[in-house]
Each structure stands twice: as structure tokens, then as C-alpha cells.
Length: 310
Image: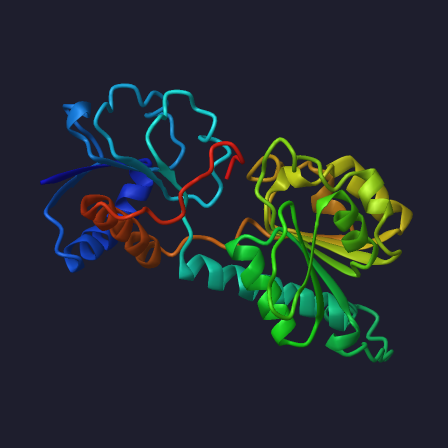
């Protein structure tokens, strides 16, 4: 009997219990699943999202893995009591949602749709945009989500450059890496999409210096992590006109405080962290598959590299 602890909060338990049981049953697993335990030493797997009830993993002496419901693990990866393997969440529903949000917003800025949607003077002023093949789009971060978005944009004929800290080779995408590669990527990014993980190396990556490397009139789109951007630097670049617009889905503090300058800025679009929200059914299937793998002695999916931080 495999003992599974759901340590992700009561609200998520209400959302996930049925999909998890359905996914575990479909794989024929013999298990108990509960949001609490009287004997932490008996727990085999922890399904986890950051919450006040579990910070110390020390009592979970026999746990085989922690299976995160979140794609980002920056709030847990440094926990010294978490010594067992840690897997982050990657699933088809999350990936598809991210691709749809990114493609929609790249197209919105590429076509200049805001000038027609927000047109209180009823001005008839058509502007023919370039074709996608003549629009340079850059994606920073070529993990699962970044690759999917880059491929989706390239499939629509955009001229796509992708940057990652380590070298990647992706058909149809110009792939760059390293500091020089980042400068080259930014210099050609008419539309920039941020999909990097949050680590000590990526926090404030898009600062005043790097914003200045982008073409005048460029657009920033961030569905990745809020702290990737130096907020003051971005606001200054928007005010100066060097950056034409920023569409932001993630922020340092969420919900975004009502008095934050982004809300009122005419060149900022705020969406409330909807780019890649989780679909419980597909997330439950990933969790169940990892438990099946763990019990079968097979490698877990989406293991976190503690050294890299993601």
C-alpha cells in the first residue's frame, strides 16, 4: 500500500482529490491518499504546493519524493530539510495554455490591435503591419514552456530567436546562449517573451542595461516570473518611450497591489496570472504517473536540479 500525503492546502484538496483518485485508479495503484497523516514516517510521496502547514520535511523519513503542483520551485528548492527527490509540474494542459496566451499576445502586439480596440475617437487610421516572417520575436528561456512557445510562434512564420543559459538546438529556432548570446538576442527582439525560471542568476535579468539593448519601440511580454524584471527600470523605459508596451502576467507580489504603478500606466497591460494556470485533470495524471514510476523503480519525470535551482 502506497501512502500519499496531499500537502498543498485545503482549497487545493477540494479541487484535486477527485482528479487524483481518478488518475491513480486508472493506473491500478494500491494507495491511500489524505491531506493529513498521524505518522509522517509512513508517507511514501508528498504532493506539495507552498503552504503554512509544511515547512519541515524532517519527520517524513521514508518519503521517496516530493511532487510539486507548481512549475516554479524557487520557494522550496532551497529548503535544507527537503532531502528527497523533488519533481516540478510540467503537463500538457499547462503547456497548451501558455502557448495560447503567448501567441495571442504576440499577435496582438504584432498586429497593433490595441489601437483599434481602444479607439474612443473612432479614428479611421489603418496601419498595415508587417508579415510575421518580418517580425523578430525573442524567447528568453528554452525549457519545456519556452520551447513550446518558440515552436508555436515559428510555426506561424515569426522570425524567432531563443536564448538559454546552456546551449540548445531546436529546429526552426535560432538558438543562442551565454552573455554574448543574450546581448544579441535582446538587440533584435522587437517582441520579447520572458519564460526563464527564477534563480539567483535570473532575478532582475531584464534591468536598465538590458532594456537599453532592445530596439526602440520594442514590446516586453512576461508570463514567466515577476522578479525577472527590474520594475523601476521597466517603468522608466516605458516612460521614456524606448519600450512601447509591457504585457505582464506575473509580479513580485501577487495579487498585484491596487496602488502599484503598473495598474494605471497607459503602456502596461496586467493580466492576473492566467497565462498558464493548472488544469487539475492533466496535473493529476502527471502526479499519478510519477508515483507509478517511483513504485516501479523507474526515473521520475521533471526532476529538479538542485544546483541549477529548477
